[in-house]
Image (cartoon, rainbow, N blue to C red; front, side, top):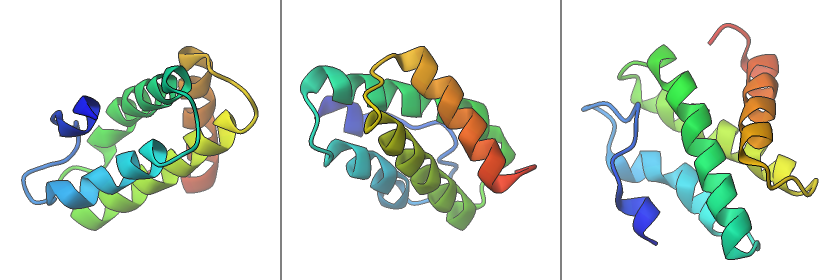
Length: 102
């Protein structure tokens, strides 16, 4: 899948790309059609772009944060939402509720 190969915001020089890609693989392995997967990836990427600056180059925190966000996005998809804006905003709200200030 070409989206997996692109550069990811918040990866940082000290974070091996394979660890950062784990969250995208989690989404990509979900059983959804191509349009839904595209919406999930887009919502994930847009939400992570908002969250990434909080993590700097802290590789373990980046990996954990991305996996947490991927799980949130996937849980929202199970509710049938394919709207990227709604997925992104709800994912950000839920993420904030689970991690607080970070």
